[in-house]
Image (cartoon, rainbow, N blue to C red; front, top):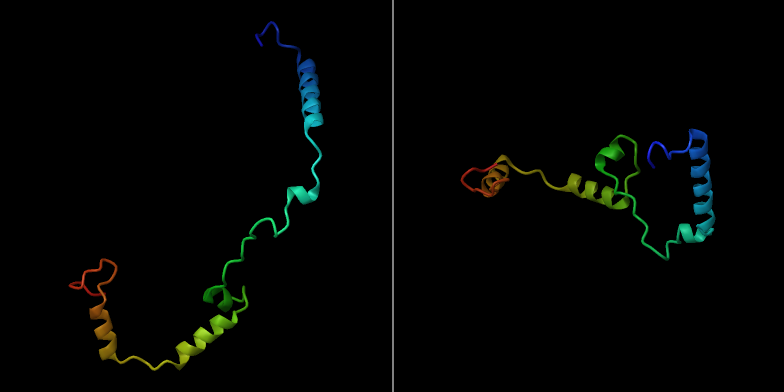
Length: 102
């Protein structure tokens, strides 16, 4: 609209309201079941796995798998300094270069 054909502010608001009402009248009513389908219709997002930090901070309950893994780690024999050194020399590290072990 050019400045000379622009309706006064009250008329413009009325025109916008009328257009919104017409558009709303054309939108079909939607049933709630159509808006949010059942889990049968789509995959629900699974909750993230709890981390050890979450469990230690009391923000999550440990899973049975987590408890089994912790028990296995506690039951594992300690590694000697010689074994730790051997593993460090065998690992090339982040750059995968065996000449610069981690």
